[in-house]
Length: 322
Image 1 (cartoon, rainbow, N blue to C red):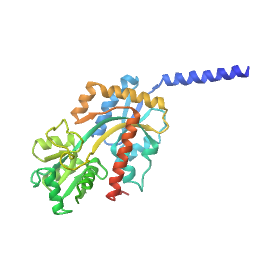
Image 2: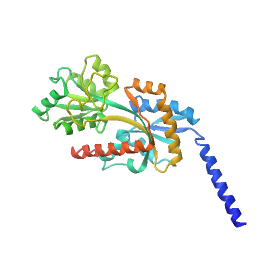
Image 3: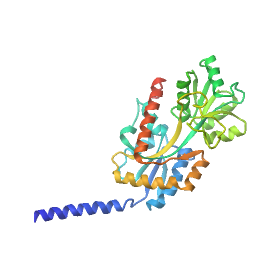
Image 4: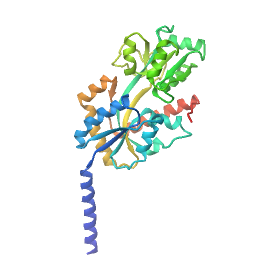
């Protein structure tokens, strides 16, 4: 009798668990964007959320929790219940840069507290200079920087941003000495570049294209390993002689560590289906971005490789933000 009762209890648990899993999701999901509305990360998140509601059968509500270079929103997700209902629109900075950059004051550990689900999109930066700068290509820019070390400056949209780290990687691989001039955002930095008060900037592609075409800045190269569809005439930094250079701004979905594997696989499958659609790829291309996708492990490996690269750049250049 005890044996039969035990079997019955086991079967009830088994079928109850299966039933609960079949019902996921049974309520709206929350997608936290750790940056302000209107930026690339926010746009990627809203494009994904709008299209993910159909396969999930539940709304995906985007919530902007900005501050501290993305750390405020990322920490809240890291501390959330690992039940598949709280997602993070994770970025290069949140997942691979901030732990090294803010190592004296980090409220979470991305490597231990967040689980990658799927890489959504990536986008290149473009190296731009004022029209009057006497450097028509990357080789001439490097020669100019080496002629007078420390005289040329680069603008960024803030310490730790992709615009900042792209320049730090350029410094490391080109052997140049450049002065960092951080601004609150690209909206402040670009006019300073156009006026010639700073010498160069690695701006995210969508923010630079209109200024390039208007002749307000000169583009020298893009930061990806392949040329950008938005401006295919521009060479890559690697093509321009900076061997091994690659710096992409990317966004993906992450969840709190401890989220059940079957829920991660479900989210991964549904988001991959969204990314495979022609509509989604076209919308991302309009932003100068490329749809990515792939299994969770591919995103895990990507994050690991990026974390090693950016930690090395930060360490080698002795960059710390308290």
